[in-house]
Image (tube, rainbow, N blue to C red):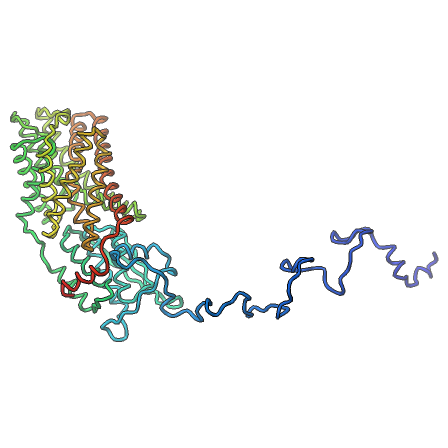
Length: 551
């Protein structure tokens, strides 16, 4: 081929014969006949109808994003818009106590919570949001300072906010800090308020009054203004404790005496334990008046019972010194804080639970230091305290049941409970010890299992009484677990440590810790079982009760 021929334009066939060998991966191999559609692209949608499938022609060949679906029905269609108060959904059963209803909604996401029904409040133009948040924090402060669990405090705060129409709120409770955040809508800035709990006091009468206030606020048929709620809250703060100081001191002594009878003491032991506990109570009051921390108050209060027990041993009086010291320890063991701490841990409030259990540990260490000082002095002076005396506890069912009921009654007085609840908690304590005695002595079951079952019965009965009266369960359970507290195991562990038998002492203290955990878990489990499977109370009974009270 000449140069002129090279410069001539080549035909299509000639150009095709000289194409390079490198082709695309998606090119059709030679010799494979592929039918071509008339002018359509080979690239199809994955939603295209397969070949061979007969589909009736649609009204519109190409669907639009705004076109109505073929399955649309005007009768079953959704609402044209979302109302400002939210889409109404099926909420919790209305005849349940407010604690259960609020707890159920707190565990739901904010977007799934049912909106509260619109209620007409006395304030024109709606309530003032900052004042509602302040009222909520003050109510939560009283509940948390009184020993209520973190979940119940959050439920009460949520109930107060919802009673005034603030449904998009999030309460948060820790050991010493309360906070609540309210967001009016998704585009508005949230409002947040907080309050610190600095002082704690045991007054179950005030706790019951706060529960009644929250119960009235959460009732849709009673409309309380903010001024009325503040007035009732101020009355609760001004009210004095139901029992004078001398009654509390006497109750402390009777509690120690009843506990000494439970571990085999006689009349002399009863009197000695009562005197030691009353003296320790007065010394603790003196330390509290001087502003000393509670650690030193517990340490000082634990010394007189141990000192009296050691003195009786040194004077060779034929009594059980171990029963005297054990009875004095029963009046000091922080059973209320222990149950609340374990309950917070089981319900997911781990920070608050850790703080409560750390507080219990400090109190327990204070008791240990006070008793160990007296026991060490007694051992140095030649007192022969026998750790094996725990094996000689005599079984006296009637005396022990009576002592357990007296212990629960005096414990209820120390907790400043209402007089109307004292009888119920006294009977609950007697039932608890009866169950424990039947399983431990008659059935020869391990003490940890027996304690757990007895504590479960206490929690079950306490929750039943609380749900029947729409009140807190603490006044019906805390005092009833008094007879089950591990006083003797604690004493004998400390005595073994004082006598240089550290291994035996640690074993006994570990047993005491196991008994304490069994009490707390049993109480919580009994309460949860009653809430899950039992329905007590109805809306009709509740409204009638409110009319009877004059609200």
